[in-house]
Image (cartoon, rainbow, N blue to C red; front, top):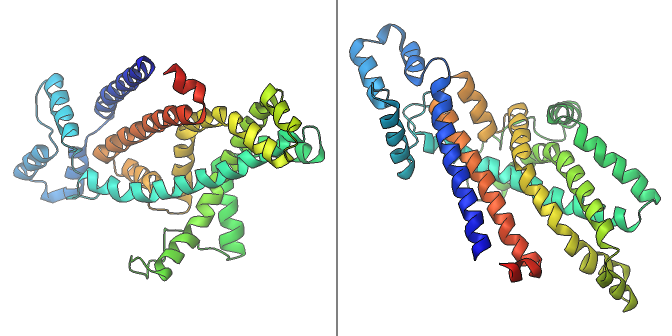
Length: 326
């Protein structure tokens, strides 16, 4: 358990550092939530109203240390403050609504891309130097290199505007009431296809490249030779002996890519007007909604740390040697 305790310590330090940075950054930005609210009020911004706004947003004149203590107390009680743009909704309410859509979008894209990328990478390594490998491997490099905004705009123009195969944007048909029925679920699925396809090329290229490199090194191991000597089929040796043991670098790469995935989702959600965290961050930045920006940055940090912790757990399940080491 010493390894697990050490890893938990690293995560705890990283989280503490993120909390401190998240507290300092908004206070270094010009203006404040109070300034934004006062600007919205215009002539109605009486001295009494301004004092009430200051009290509501915690903009009191006190030392930075005490402000930080209050901030940590708020985090402990899940009180992230009040949104400026969506006042009087709390930050937790705004992010909670947006998080569901981003989690759905990113999870769907990752699962789809992981399945496609791993299979392509395993087959490319198995047939290294063949026609399949010479086509797929360079194509993966191209998919990694293309910026997400180019993919999003091209996908939107070709499949939504020109061909009209899919909706132009949003998460579902605005004329529908959210309900667990075939019509609503089908609408959500149709509206998610283009955003998922926009996020997938980069992920597929990364997974294919990593899986191919890892698979090539694994194919030279003794247990793969033994599998072949047993007379097993190519598929059994490729996936049962080779791909399973080559998955560890892919999982590591997934955790490292999570930040890039969130970055891609921000662009994708803005282009497709998809009501996730990316669009929320964009609208909050325009409205100078610092409480929402601060809460979202912390949420993304927690998601990245959580993904890395989950990968550590999966490592132990996939590789018995790591379980023995722990």
